[in-house]
Image 1 (spheres, rainbow, N blue to C red):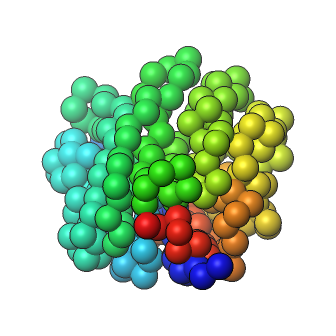
Image 2 (cartoon, helix red, strand yellow; image 1 turned 120 degrees about the vertical axis):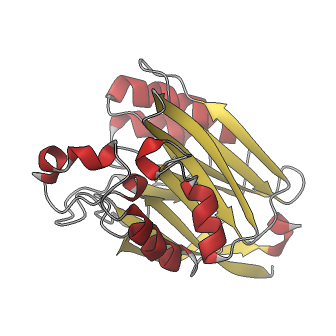
Length: 252
């Protein structure tokens, strides 16, 4: 069966903010609500990284609030990196001062993009899905940013498992806020064809990566060729870059 190799990237970009150590969460907290701190320069660095990929999933991309200077960061990255297709899913809006979104950048035209709110104790999480091709066999890419609490994550993963349960060519990427062997992850593996990652790549914190909490899970019919963590400017998460072999039939 012939296949096509695609380069995929998942990146929590922290809205272009800079975090170089735990102390910055306190001393630079202003950068999370004000349009300062050279966010535009950080976005340009992220655009250079994103531009080396075919499909990019973003988390914590600001959709156009005060802290980003009212810039839709997903759109900005699409333009800077030369992506023909982009979409975003605004999730959380704190009084117009700080907003957060999942984002999709793609060189391939998606046939269908859908926005799904996720369950949780606190509203404001979502999963963005894009289908590339027709029918059940089409490649489906899902981008999510899960909650910090384990029970909320369990409910969210149950919801995502229902979405992806019968799809042979699926990718789930994003910031899971948990390791891949956590109990709440097991239902996802049982109820879908998604596999645990072939290797645990630490992505957090970016300045001294110790925890593998950003993941790119693929179904058994897809083959990961390479996986590596890369800096996403000065976000507190490293980005996850994957080369993936996808059957041609999944892209038709």
